Image 1 (cartoon, helix red, strand yellow):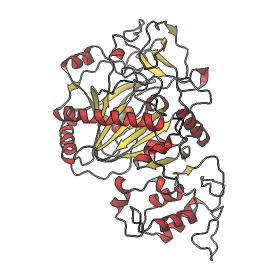
Image 2: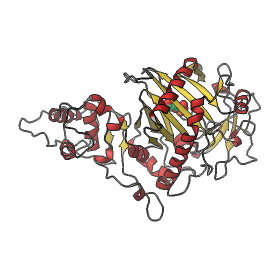
Image 3: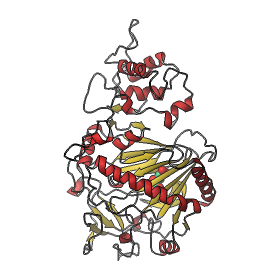
Image 4: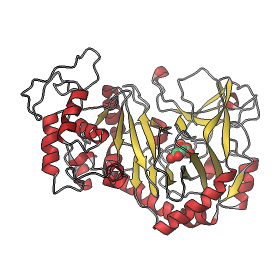
Length: 479
Ligand SMILES: O=C(O)CCC(=O)C(=O)O
Ligand SMILES: [Fe+2]
């Protein structure tokens, strides 16, 4: 019972935060199911809803309740109003798969957030309108299914049923076979060597890239030996992903950034030339909270992520900044940050079904973290069984090839690109290069540190190679 949503600062009678001081009030015998009682705990409200709609799952009822600020009356009115005309027939016997199915979940917009056409999100002066407030509470998870909700409230967009079915299945079959030889990634976390709780493989397009990856690029302080050529299916769908991601990028610029790309975002089309393929074999396999490495992608990186097989939850949470804004921060981001700060920073869960393409937009890696949460159960997939395959297509930029980027002279490991994600020191949002040897099993890090400077389009500026001793700026560890 720890999933809650709060709206704005309103501490109203409908604030449904779990307050340990609240005692379960005894419901007066004559109370009608649609009366609201200020002191009533969520459990009791849920039980009242459940008594009217016994066949609906508790999770779904809770979602509805939360979408109505905890008001049982408003929830019941809304459900009644939705009967007959709505996509989900709430009064009919719900098959649990239908209710839980991504395609069948109603959107939050349908309930409390006025549905606005995309165009109307941009004001006449070109500035994006403030989005409807939808806040997550610390320690709480807000589940989003609807593409418009996801686009509004996260730095991601999603395309369901992305490929024709036979192609998605062909790709899945091929990668399930490939995944038999995938490895766990090992890295050093503080003084321990840890390995990722899932397996992965890395693919590039050409022989030249393959050689470069083996001889020049460094990951977690080590060379990657197992680099593979894109498989026929990975190669085949690459142009589709490219086309869709570029379309989503333009759509986002138009509808969310007021028609102008973000500072440091590349104006060039996104061109995927590498893919990490992840395999999660069973509900317990996962990937922990992280931001993806910017080192070879540059600032404001964009990633196209295709999911196949078992549906899993992709969780995102904003890294809470302070009021001190860095100059890279956009107006949209400032507003979102303020909201998050007020809310105390919860997490949002995006459900990724088979054959869905998730685009991680340029706000994602610098300001948010993401993970694939371990879970108790999964719905087995007809082809994949317990497994989920995920492909993250990436655009490795020539200007971020290790031959162009700073290298630490104290040890042989090339520097990694990071961003200051914490307020201390007044450098929030600034990029820097640092030695990654501290993350290499068996190697100690050195103090190499250097601020990274880019032009408006995210290209490294020449002559920014002054070496400075590492003093600690509150930077966060990347994956
Ligand atoms: O499996 C996923 O959807 C995400 C994987 C991921 O975050 C990564 O490869 O960096
Ligand atoms: Fe990631």
